[in-house]
Length: 136
Image (cartoon, rainbow, N blue to C red; front, side, top):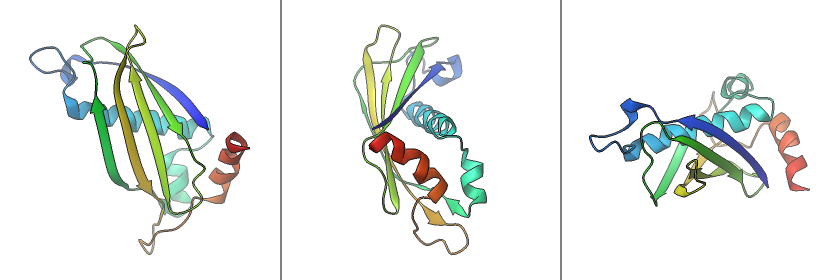
C-alpha cells in the first residue's frame, strides 16, 4: 500500500456562516493531498502531462462524519490500496483533525488518458516503477 499524509489549515473563506467547512471544499483538500502524494514519488501532474498522459477525475465520493472548522489543522491521508495495472487509479482519502478524529472519507477515481488521442491508456512506466516498490 502507498500512503502519504498532507496537512492543510482550514481558511476562513472555506467555511460557512456556522464556521464549518463547506462540504464541497473537501474535494480541493483531496486534490492537494493527491498532488503531494505524487510529488513524494518524484513527479508532478505537469511531469505526467509531459509524458503525454492526462488524468481526468471520473468519479468522486465523500462521506462526512464530523465537521471541520475554521483554523483546524487537518491531516489528509492519501492511500493507494492497489497497484494500478490498467487505465484507472483509485485514491482513498481520510481527513483527521488535530484530535485525530476522523472527519471525512473520500474516494476519487481518475483515468490515465493519452493526451493526443483522448483514449484510455496505462500509467506511465516511470511512475509505475516507483509505485511497485510499495506493493512488493
